[in-house]
Length: 101
Image (cartoon, rainbow, N blue to C red; front, side, top):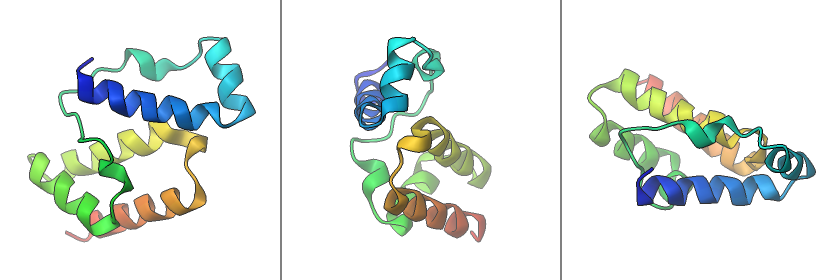
């Protein structure tokens, strides 16, 4: 894992640790995301930006819309239940914006 990916992973783990289910998953070592390797490492705080900035950043870092959507879905799926309602809403808005490009 690169240092940027470790930062993303640490942010996800921090979010997961805020829930009882997350603590149970960590203690049982069931987090499958640990073994996932990617070629793209988003900058720290990338997914906390506005939906339009997320879309713009994903499009500039991706070869096409399909890859950009895959990267967004990858993050959403890894964050899972640890996403706040506000975060999930912003990321879903980014998905909608991305699909209209």
